[in-house]
Length: 115
Length: 114
Image (cartoon, rainbow over all chains, first blue to last red; front, side, top):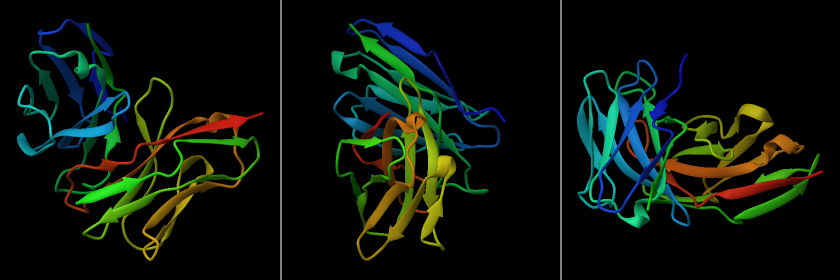
């Protein structure tokens, strides 16, 4: 069974640009979570999508946004990039209301570098 | 609100020695608790989890953890460290069976000396 996949693995942008990160959940999983792992700040929750709806949002500015597609894959968009957005962005998936919702399985991450 | 405290950002043990990584949590609801491991330049891998039932939980790679409600702890142990255990370990708490975000501790980096 394939795990959570993320693309691209690395992304280099300059300040003010936009970044788009993609995530495909494990087959059968309907919930997708996004976390930011920045140096010195640990793992911070960004967004939770389930069945195409945004269910919860962490303490991040509105320039962090995303969506979930009908096939349950997800996209994270970061607008007006700032230097401090440089981080590893991790996507996780879990079963939705049909099963074990509490266990999240993580992808390998996208490393974003903002210059 | 939920929070996790991991005591010791760095732990160093000799190969073959006991591994003990400490995790204390705070939760206003019965917690679901997790340990994840992160190898360099990789994502998080689930080691084990506690939801309900048996308080001693066994995971992959010989790790286990015990949920102690009275001490609000969920420490991770392994009887004998292996060089391949060198990684960063994260304790996390979740709100329960309905899903939603995990709250992570700051992580403990484990070094294993030959």
